[in-house]
Image (cartoon, rainbow, N blue to C red; front, side):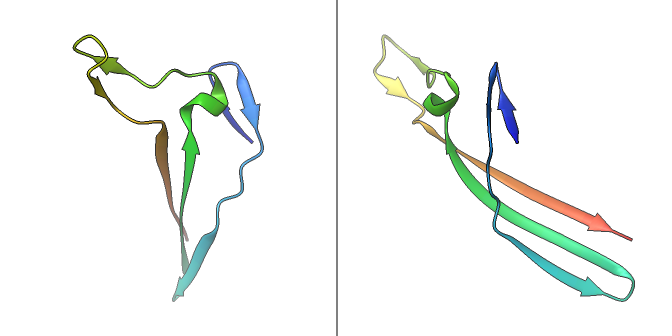
Length: 64
């Protein structure tokens, strides 16, 4: 579950698991939309410059 502000949603992250000796490295990336979580994408200069609605979330975990 991913919680942003007061909105919680179930998010699936496709991951890759690599084993090296006794360690595991888990990596994955998922894109979410700010508006799905009630967040208005930032803008400035009287709304002429906007950031876009999507955010890329990257997960990198190493387990020993």
